[in-house]
Amino acid sequence: MGKWFSGVKKFIPFEGYAKSVKTAARISFPKISSDCTDKEPSNFLSHKKMVPYSDPPSMEDVESLYEFFDRSTKLVVLTGAGMSTESGIPDYRSPNGAYSTGFKPITHQEFLRSIKARRRYWARSYAGWRRFTAAQPSTGHIALSSLEKAGHISFLITQNVDRLHHRAGSNPLELHGTVYIVACTNCGFSLPRDLFQDQVKAHNPKVIFIQLFY
Image (cartoon, rainbow, N blue to C red; front, side, top):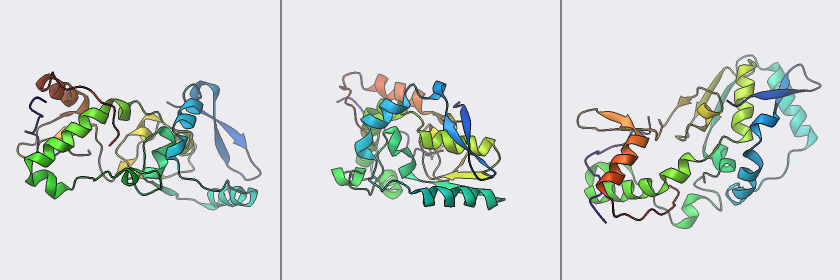
């Protein structure tokens, strides 16, 4: 299977336009415009099994949300893995999440300690990269971006490493960094993940590409 690139000991997980729908409250909530919906419906339907079931919101829930936004002067939003399930990226702990498939995430300590673990990590990362980067921002990502631009959200924080918030037009604080930059813990050298993908491919010309998620 070639010589899986193992020299890098650590990877540092380093526009959509929206219209508004007027509500009874003094704020406006976003609605996706026609030029943002070319990929959304098919994306959502094809990845529906990754979205944990939840009861649809009641009108009371919606009105409460409107009122909450209306009376908030400094609103901070924190998003996690569930934000990207509608984009086709599975979360971890839901019934159809990554853990339900037997997926075992690698720990930072294991990654640094074991060359075998690093090879396993990069092999899986290589196989899943193309599908991972093909994910598109969901209506949720675009809605938050619209609320930011309208001044209703003061600050956005995310635990996600997929940069879908960025692609929707936001600029969040990334608590866990991003998978789009790879860095060496020995010398500090870093490069874009896409270029690293090309290097892995060049070092492993006989590897058969298999579509995987992380």
